[in-house]
View 1: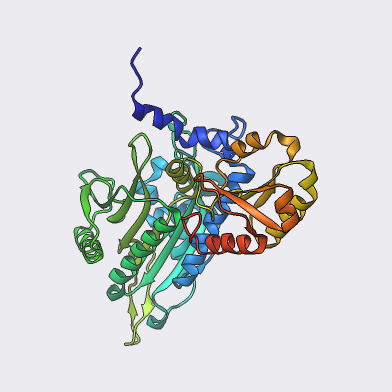
View 2: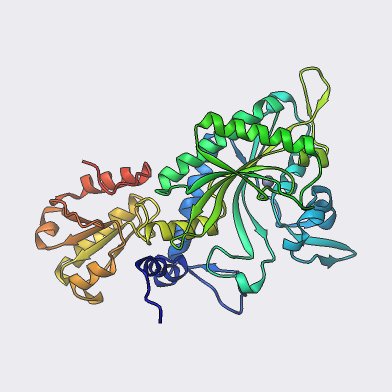
Length: 417
Ligand SMILES: [Zn+2]
């Protein structure tokens, strides 16, 4: 038998599939099907909080949110080019009253149609359309597992319709949003990749389109000062992209976030805007995803933090631990105050075990409030932090306000001061 290296050990410990099951975040059931995970309440809290974060960041950056259906007619993907270049990854079409519909492999064609549904003046540009929407990929059952190899994907997606002159700045702004999100999430990119086409027929043929879009993305990266590697054969079928790469504890690399400049889809969908000259002009489409799919983002967060999420993302932010039944009444009142302040708090009552056992069970909760007779009498709280620090007893209102502030600022530190 081969000895296991410490590296291998860590891989097992921080594997998101194992932690996801141990921490009751998500699971799968053969009756729902492989690659179709469901989210348990604690996992749903993490995902929901992440979705709120990204929608809020997008609103501040001038994006407008839409909803569009997960199905589209086959013709839609024939126009977009997916049918010719991407059908191997798509589910087979369903016959529906004489027409064929497909589970969508991406949101781009729907957003192109939403743009096209109204006429647009140059004054409206850049027009930023965002959606956190479902899409589907017909992965083979042999490669499915956890939250990273799935058939149903919920993508944090957006498309910016803009003039040629605006495209580089819009793509650069998207790259900055990605950097800010990673800081709030406490994660780090492994590297930035400029993904270019390779040999073979899977790319749309238009050398001028590829040359222009690649040059603009290089410009975006050069201006940002971010180091990157250009890699051939990793582009989307319709254009080059900037990929923000992450690695799992086993060292395997994958793409979490992307920024693309696209001349192809606006052509295919015959998109236009009315310029200052009163004539029709072709917009450019910038595709971008700040945190990628909810599935991959949460998988990475689980692995990067070993389940100890930053306080703003933690399923339970504060656990209340009464020493004995005598402090239960006070503990219940404290729980109410925490919930009223918007904190995700829960009570671990003495009937759940010894104080030591309850503290151990709550080891991933950022804040643990032990309530003894003295704290109950003084309306004070003695906080233990997840990192082992123990704070002096302090007035309850002060402590909750401080925690509320850290959560609201999405601070990755547990305590300041
Ligand atoms: Zn897109």
